[in-house]
Length: 125
Image (cartoon, rainbow, N blue to C red):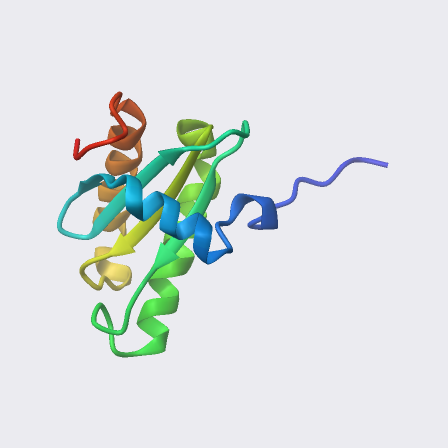
């Protein structure tokens, strides 16, 4: 029997508790652009974890907020090797639709690379 590749966003890859989010926010190591703000903190495990903040100010319609979350989760899932050993919180700043999705994905990928390269994760990078 062949092992099937799983494409799900595993529970151990998520920031779930308020304390997890608070510890990332309190460290304040962040990078940002027009679409997103990415905050990061080293964790003690060998895998990366993701937290999402997509508020109603970003997009009033739930459809738009859910599209943003799906896009961020998928990009994170495809690029977890860039973020190994980090807890990452992605905050959306600007709504985007399918026609702007490629630009938003490229912007988020560049932020993932910048937060990993940031050596001093205790300040703004």
